[in-house]
Structures are given as C-alpha cells and as structure tokens.
Image 1 (tube, rainbow, N blue to C red):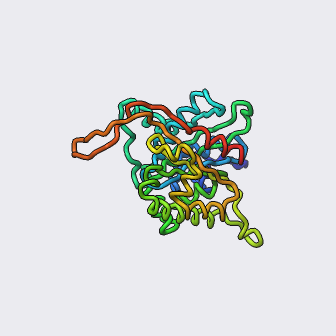
Image 2: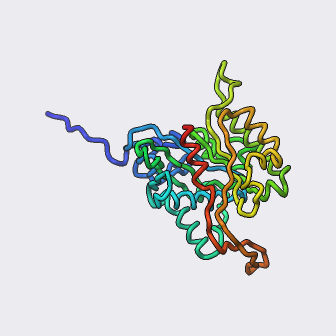
Image 3: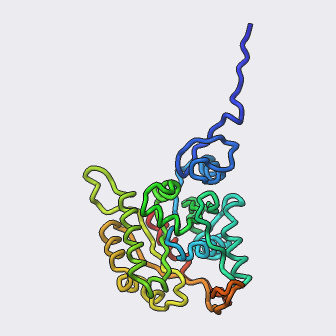
Length: 299
C-alpha cells in the first residue's frame, strides 16, 4: 500500500515582508503587521538581491506627498540621470493624484493619520549609465502627525520604525517657509527626529558612539517662495534650525542640505468653508532629483 504525498497548498505558502520581516500568507494583499503591499515583498523576493530602501519622512505640512509624487513622475519619464520603474498599481497612486491635482490647480489632499489608509510606493531606481545598480524607494506616504506621535511615544506606529530601520538612506523634508517664520518650533521637532534616528541607527559595543554612516538628504521644500533657502540651503538651515544642524553633525557622518520647489507661481483662494488656500498656477519643478542623486552616490 502506498501513501500519497500531498503538496503544500497555495494557501499554506508564506511570504516574508520586505519591510517588517514578518511572515504572512502569500495570497494576502497586504502584510497584516505593517500594511505594506504584498507586491513589494514579492518583487524583492523574485529579484533575489537584498533591497536597498530609501524612505521619505518629515513633519506635517512639509509637502511629502507633492514631492514624492513629482519625484516619481520625473523618474518614470526617464528624462534625467536616474530612471525609475514603479512596481504595482499601488505605486502609481501618489504620482497620479499629485499630477492630477496640480493640473487642476490644487494640491493633493492631506494624508490620513491612520496607517491602514497610507498609500505605499515602491519604485526601483537606477542611474541611466549603471542600470543594474538598483535602489528601492519603498515608503508609505507617511502622515506627519503619525511621525510626530512616533517621536513622542516609540512604537506607536511600528511600521514607521520598521521602514526607517530598513532604510539605507533617508530623504527628510521640511517646509522652508515654516522654518523661516517659526524656526524654533520646526527646530524642536527636527531635534527630536535626529535623536530618534540616531538611536535607531546606533551601533553596538565599541561602535555605539560612532557617527552613523546612513546618509540623510535634508530638503527644504516650497523654496520657490523662500529664495534664501534656495540660494544656500546649508546657511539657511544654520540660521533657522541650529539645534538640528548640530544634531546632524554630531550623529551622522554623511548629510547634506538641499532646497526644492515645484510651483513656479500660485494664487491665494478661498474654499467653500471660507478657508484660505494656495492654488498652484504654474508647475516648475526645481531641485527634485538632486537629493536622490546624491543619496544614491552614498549607498
């Protein structure tokens, strides 16, 4: 009498999340632990090489959604020194919403605070001259309020810690006008952030007090309305956020300041609730690709 062997069913197959490293059923659409799309993990697994994550973070109102959407659009067009290939329909949502909003002379809606509503992005990026040197932009479009809460109470949003800790480099965004007009508030947030990152990337034993080698590109957004930031981002940072600059110099051996702008001109409008809001009239991106170019030279 022979005993039939049964092959494991597709339902029992497991996939390891590329972000939080938890296992989950391969037929799932999202990781149940961190809500990362399963497609991200599938692409990374099939490629067979360890992912090199780059994440985008910053406080509420820094313009992360607009910057990320414009960055993805420029990468996918293939007109710059870098080429980008978005993976999965979910990766196109931020890009699509940003471009549609700007074409309609408005900015995208504010990112919800709930982690299960964050839109994820996975874009494989490589230099045009070295197409096999791939870096993965893998990041949820994080809500600034969620980041602030995570800084105050660690592991409030485990996905934030998971994504950042896996990152080989970071793009950190700050609103240049906010830094200019209320630099002290912005500086305090930034000091908390750099301390959080230093603890996250700190080595062990004799390496504990060495500067981290993780490169961070600090980008002052909306610099089209803040010429002093566009002219000299590093001098602007020292003048408006000195505590943050000192924290970067103390904890990170590789960091650099940039400025970026997307809107060439805008008007002030009033919505149906009487709230004033900026209306982009002319899109003229500047300084979008340069931070990522520098970052890719470092990782």
